[in-house]
Length: 78
Image 1 (tube, rainbow, N blue to C red):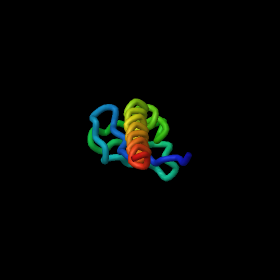
Image 2: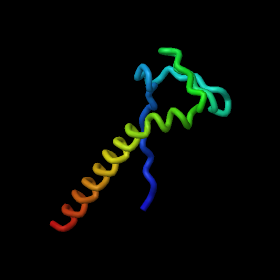
Image 3: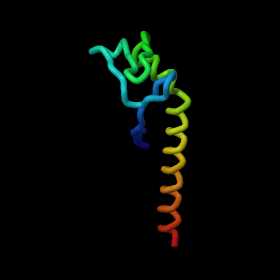
């Protein structure tokens, strides 16, 4: 089975903005331009704070993959 890419934006834990981030070169620091919140744990901190959203997207993607495969199998059985 192959690994599927799950796309989506990380969101600021304070203001919910999803596209106003500034990072340093190695992503160990992230700042939200919308509200000014600084993530001194960098990209990893932002990932951790978005863990629930990421898991929900993964579950939805997994469900879609299973449904599509099931439809394909049922179509081939007819």
